[in-house]
Image 1: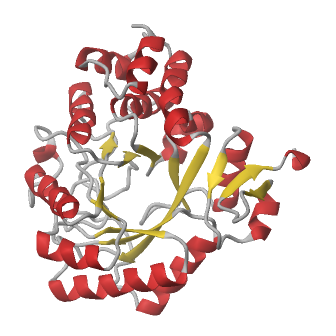
Image 2 (image 1 turned 120 degrees about the horizontal axis):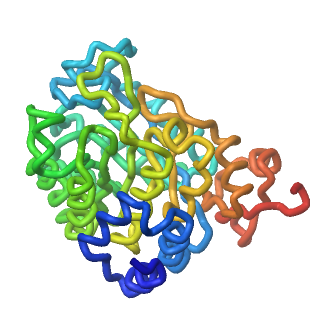
Amino acid sequence: MNTQDLAARALRDEPPSEADARRILDGPDPELLPLLQAAFEPRRAHFGRTVMVHVLNNVQNGLCPEDCGYCSQSRDSSSEIRKYPMKADAEILAEAERAARAGASRYCMVLSGRGPSLERTRRLAELVREVKARWPIEVCLSVGLLGEEHARILADAGLDRLNHNLNTSESHYGEICSTHTYADRVATLAAAKKCGIEPCSGLILGMGETTTDVVEVAFRLRELEVPSIPVNFLIPIDGNPVLSDGSLSPERCLRALCLMRLVNPRAEIRIAGGREGHLRSLGPLGLWPANSLFVEGYLTTRGDAVRDTYRMIRDAGFEVQGNPAWDETLAEETGFRLAGGEGEILKPDVRQN
């Protein structure tokens, strides 16, 4: 398989064949470094060397009736987490401000549960309006299953994106969850898209899935025209029914990111949960196929801090796509300088290298 051909196809918005997609993930041909360069070509064409940073806020924790086996908030998990109902509006807005000051492109509010009531949806819509009125930051919401009526309320409030991950293939879905179906998840994404909200949907690797399962998800996301794809690497949490299957070496994680980029060349590919523990010292290489990541943790687990992440981005030769509200002190501490007049792109400051 010629990696230059893979890059050329992606630049024409053509995916690899399914056979080549399996080879991308399984290796050893193509070798990793040429593959990363092939994935970088469409990444550079559509996003340059910028990196979008996202901050998650766990607005409601635990108390969930669903049995998703990978999740420490599910009804079947015995993990020791602090459970709480929905936070006060003032706390949610304060955390949105911290995300904006940290230079985040997007503030992501996440609520546990099967899905919100209409009353809860209206409250969330008001929060979306308030966040967007106060700070120059996009808002994403992850609240479980939604119908068209709920999605319309959120769309009218100006919600930028709705997250609902496919997580795995349709055939493997029953192995990780029984209280809702794969079709339910696809229907939620369809409702969001119909109402004008951009869908955000990705997968979790390391749950016993096969290469065929991963390839199937990559192509299904392309079929659904999902513009934002988070790639999660399962974080093994004691007490969860589904624990890591041991398949995730740093190289396989990087190959999965390359696969997502080459199948979905125009999408925002995000290095999501588990990047620190699974990519380890190869973490910076993830920026070759991916153009966004999370900072400051993943709901019930910790992640790298903003400052450490920004230094990693700078050292790898990339730029942070921030927002005009970001804290200039943070720029100085992490070796970036403001550029473009409004401070929306944070470029490495060579004077501090």
